[in-house]
Amino acid sequence: MTTLALLGGGKMGEALLGGLVDGGWDPENLAVAEVMAERRHALESRFAKIRVVPNPAWAVAEAEVVVVAVKPGDVPAALAAAEPVLEPGALVLSIAAGVTIATIEGLDPGRPVIRAMPNTPALVGMGAAAISAGTHAGDEHMHRAESILGVVGTVTRVPESLLDAVTGLSGSGPAYVFLVAEALIEAGVHAGLPRPVSQALVTQTLLGSATLLAQGPDGAEALRAAVTSPGGTTAAGLAALESRAVRAAFLEAVTAATKRSKELGGS
Image (cartoon, rainbow, N blue to C red; front, side, top):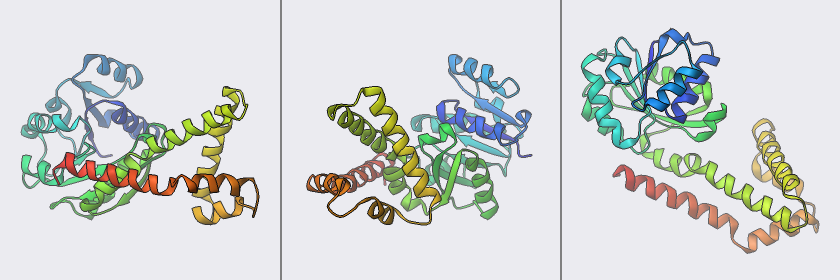
């Protein structure tokens, strides 16, 4: 079993650890470095058999894979602390938003590096991640990254040039969906439903619709058309949405988030 060290024990890192353990990884082959004492205690309480330490160098010794899950501004310091004891062929898998492959490779030349963009549904094992290979990362490294991130969702390979678009779409996407949920709940209340009823109906509607899209043979357009009877209630509701340019608003949201991701990454 691959020995994995995680740098950063925040929510995403904790979700990944939970997925690995649930997926059959031996906790004794996992280690996590977390500088905040409160987070270390929380991780120790949940993962009694995983080694939790305050210093990156203490976590990465003999690790075959190092997952970088610290805040973007903390990446250089974390890797600088780890590099002196890091095995020469160890893979660095970074989920630090906006930190480019070139930046990481510049911190440790010759190192196989893979950059990933996951999203928050990974917290419930339903994430969507995209990965890109660095200069020295081969197919075996990509397979390894897929096996690791796959424990908390789906994984797609893309060129690094597309990771900003991934950030704008699936990275930021959960917030768009939550905004839609908020609006639908408020609309239900406005139409006369008690708030708990409206919330329960909206939650199940979103969950059921996403499941139907994921598991059915039809795409979104066909599924939407199947619900829309000519002259019916759904057609009236969709006409109202189209009159407010909802499609264009989502397009602009993804475009704006993609642009901002490029700005933050310096690309």
